[in-house]
Length: 162
Image (cartoon, rainbow, N blue to C red; front, side, top):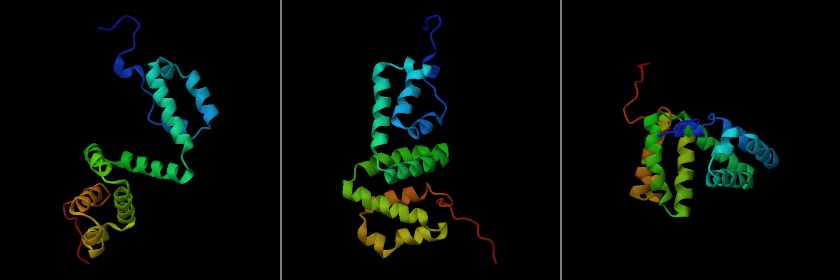
């Protein structure tokens, strides 16, 4: 039961989707000023406020190339359908469970895969290079990641006769 004047929990701390994107592009002093003046942020429990500040601190400490890589990942994730997002969320723990060096290798192969035209992705995944370098589990992970890319669905695409 809600008390009079209390904001419903669901709506209590909602910011527009671009709020934190804009925050991360501000200098740290400006971030702190915005947070200090933001009513929604001030209504957050202290633990949640601390978590937001910590995430911004970690973001601010990243190298520019790491920030760019994270922005790219976020853009890709935001372009996915709800079903694809669910699949990406299911893939993440599997990728996370790999040893750090293997995660780098898989991510490097995924970046290469992503840079290829759609028609070259499946042959790349079936190549001797990939077959010899990755375990069956890692190849399965790459295959599932491939299906998240635009124009890389598991069903055959229509190609008109020339």
